Image (cartoon, rainbow, N blue to C red; front, side, top):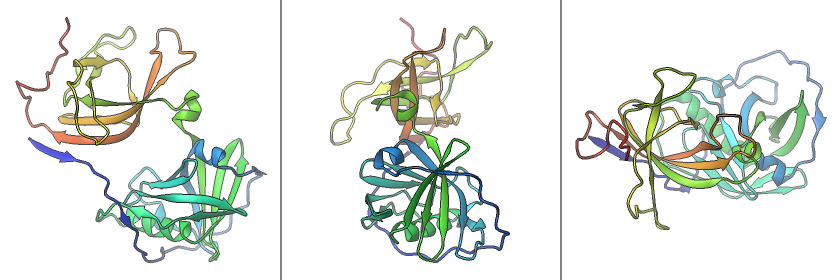
Length: 281
């Protein structure tokens, strides 16, 4: 049994080389509408990289190789974070006369062999720390966020509503332990359906386990953003949202993955640990 605790130590970011690029023909701009920029608007979306060009209109193809998903920015009222680069990156920011101004960025200290991830990291760090012009528009009802650097480099992100925006509230943070094996569960429309087997975990303010875990039980719905790997036990930090108008015969809550706190590969069932079947009273 091999366990791995995923931690996020922070350290000052290092500058990296500029991205390579290839020539492309300039595409005609689609009709768009300018939108007033505010921290509230920025925080309503996950911003995923859609296009990137340098000052000569050459597309930065190195940012779009695998792996998926694309480079992503997330904003709160005063912080910006970067996902899907080599390291997780974050820092404080302010909006000053149409520019995005960040503090020195912090990031985890992982080494990545994947060139695409390294290129994403070096590029977004350089852009964020260069006081880029921030342009918010909509095209075909889709929000677009463009960060334009003085060098001419331009990154355009497509906005996808956050869970808070979709469900109308901040949600409740909780921790779910997911068993290595799924369990059969009844579903009126899906014969032979399997469900995740979960139990609730509790942690104190120092991040240490506290109290006893809840009972194992099948989860009759998916966890947004989570893909289960058979044979792997995970502890997830999730947000639980109450649905105001759930569909008939559907759950009244939604679970959205926030982060994976622990991950453990289980080669064989542990007779004294995780049950394969839920224990019903």
